[in-house]
Image: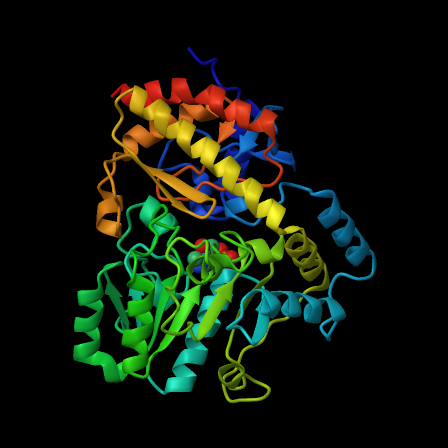
Length: 445
Ligand SMILES: *Cc1c(COP(=O)(O)O)cnc(C)c1O
């Protein structure tokens, strides 16, 4: 038996929060609706550890949903942030760190010649869509069921992340006109893509896709799929937008792009037919602060204001503290880090799978670089419909047993698990020790 969790202080904060904030949270999945129970209110975080207001420690496998790739309060990032903050919080006029961060991104992802910095992944995809529509003079956008691109009106239909966790078809408040300009197709289905383009190709401004989806759980592109996206869009004069907000600088030094171009990649050659026109980034590149970006070919980016007619702006865009955090984080993302992330992901995902197998729990582990998730059903899971077919109740029992064992997983079976460079042997051991009881809980319907 696990000890009863101590949650009195967390419960008190959440209760007060509910009075002044819908659901007591500022982003819906944090409310634990999919798994039940009390969200842990975090007081501080260091390395792989979270400490809640009840004084309990957890090994963190959420990593703020991706950004904390070096672990929490990494000394180099903390020093950079402290230095930057002492020099000013926001200037509203250019600063050098913005250029350095843009250069770091451009040097890592070959097809990206220019970027514009923004403050969230949502802003990045929203602006990339506007740019694609402005550049093509077309309105329709294709997205894939289960992919999440932030809470942009046109992109919420059959979205992943919280929309999947809460089993919503989309969102109220999205105008029919906006939803009507979005075509939602099943992921990994080349025939559906070809059919949609055969019918409406002349109206389609862009296809936006997660480079390797991680918001319906981890569902990598099937071999040849990335190439098909490029071939079909190019044949119809539509742009291809690769959303690397989650995978960027996480799956490899150059994100998922690196895995499909590099020799050691999951599907080397996926981009052999040509690179995407636009990319979006966020999460890791902000190092835990609000910094994100969209970018691509210079001729396309030249259509943005002030050089071109597509308007885009932001009071806090290129914020000096956020760019300092992002730059220090990316500078810490070296080959050694990616090697260690892979090893930790190997160890944890293998052990989790073995524990579940031992208890006869149907499941499949899917990977994209060091990102992975466990679907509580037999695999492979290649699209959103399959992801929705998993046993979310079994995940809920597994989740709470892990939490009781001192491991904070994402509170949804539609989310990737994130390891960091700070997950040392001691942290991994806590995870390994928690797994057997969690697997038994998952098995006990
Ligand atoms: C998180 C995410 C976004 C949205 O980013 P925010 O910073 O939460 O607005 C967009 N696309 C993908 C693929 C993401 O994972």
